Image (tube, rainbow over all chains, first blue to last red; front, side, top):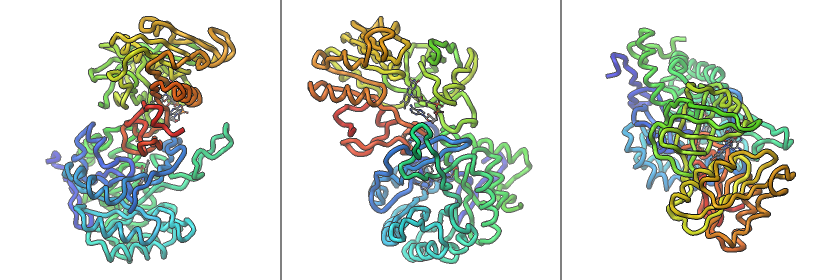
Length: 303
Length: 245
Ligand SMILES: Cc1cc2nc3c(=O)[nH]c(=O)nc-3n(C[C@H](O)[C@H](O)[C@H](O)COP(=O)(O)OP(=O)(O)OC[C@H]3O[C@@H](n4cnc5c(N)ncnc54)[C@H](O)[C@@H]3O)c2cc1C
Ligand SMILES: Cc1cc2nc3c(=O)[nH]c(=O)nc-3n(C[C@H](O)[C@H](O)[C@H](O)COP(=O)(O)O)c2cc1C
Ligand code: FES
């Protein structure tokens, strides 16, 4: 179909018609962007990050532009797992592509209950966001220490019958150790990276911009670091890796695939160009033709 | 709501830092109080910039903006014939259909431009509109309100022109059925409080930092009496009595 270029990929047994996935938190549940173009063109959509219970998110400024990127402190505002199952899924199913439910949590119990509910619902994959602070361990994120991550992934694995993606934070002490721990605990795939912990100060107010002081950096600024992390993780793990971080163009997609990614997610670029999903896909076909790539899978991990 | 490329017809400098950008309309309905996300760059800046509809004419959209930072500085460089990208029309706009009686529009700074299209729409419905326009020092856009308004009250902070002080000092909400306000939050809060005292219906158009501008990222959420709302999509216009401030 795609002008003699095969873009179809398989991640943890799930078929994607192309490797482009909308990144969690940047695309809602797909509905808004679907007003602008058929988001069913994308390989898949990762839902807004869900938590077991509804969350209002953070107070104060939530988004802040930075050089070649942005910072956010949305704080996982979401309707909760139950409302997602009751309304969000049907809405996302409409698009006809891979439906990924992204879920975060602040305690082991929440992760397990939420994952159990989602596993029994009509989703294709569960993407576990382990970047959230763990309230019990004093706010330290599950995604920082490999042994803490291993425990939560292991417990979720037990209750999750769906393909399980674990989304890694680049703030992990050691991203490769973290990846190996999650793989060992039963992850079917890994996605990386989430946002980098960062800071901005309003010099006029002489105060941090964000109420939480630190916020997550995303966009083009993080791409080279994200690429390095994807590359080094791909060298060590057997499970497929979904590359994320500052992907704005078809060239960026090929870089991540050459670094070893089976698929990619696009986040911040949607804000710069609301048609980014459709545009990158179009460009990817032409770029593959130009580069003599007849199947995107043939270049995976060649670097 | 569409994302499209348009061509600059004119980009006029009105004062030291106020410009009016006129672009080709390219179809699409556009209502008073709505806005567009604009960008005249590729990826040098990450985000598009929300700017209200100042005037919507059959063939052209007008935006009045103040240069405050990187994005608006780039917009100020636009020349006739240049291309730029627009996403919109975005947001709910003022519920002009539901408004009746005598109306006051109360604007401050770059909250003034969207009230021009609003006054025009309300006047076209046969309503009487008075404008209260507050400026820091230099006036702009006042003549644009003249065709649509019965009375125009102007203030500057140090009294260079018009009344010396805040435009809210001149407002008597009890003389109006509906008050519509857009401007700095302190001004809108004051207007809302005055309207609460007299029981006058008051609509506020909020300003908030935005990323997507279409309701997907939750970067612009605010807490209201009806739960969390997205300024970009559920707003920017809210009934003052729904706001928690
Ligand atoms: C719904 C809405 C309608 C608006 N209508 C107008 C208008 O008609 N005329 C006008 O002059 N201005 C208007 N503004 C404000 C305008 O969006 C900002 O002045 C502009 O985004 C500043 O961009 P910058 O790159 O020059 O500033 P920078 O400070 O360099 O911008 C950095 C980031 O902060 C955001 N930002 C900065 N100031 C504001 C602000 N006051 N409100 C929201 N985001 C901000 C920018 O969008 C950008 O993402 C409106 C804002 C909103 C939310
Ligand atoms: C506004 C915003 C909200 C986000 N919300 C979530 C979220 O809820 N869950 C999650 O796992 N990642 C979230 N992310 C992270 C993105 O999914 C992605 O991992 C990150 O932004 C890096 O990719 P990018 O540079 O392409 O944006 C969010 C990012 C942004 C910018
Ligand atoms: S700016 Fe993204 S939801 Fe409002």
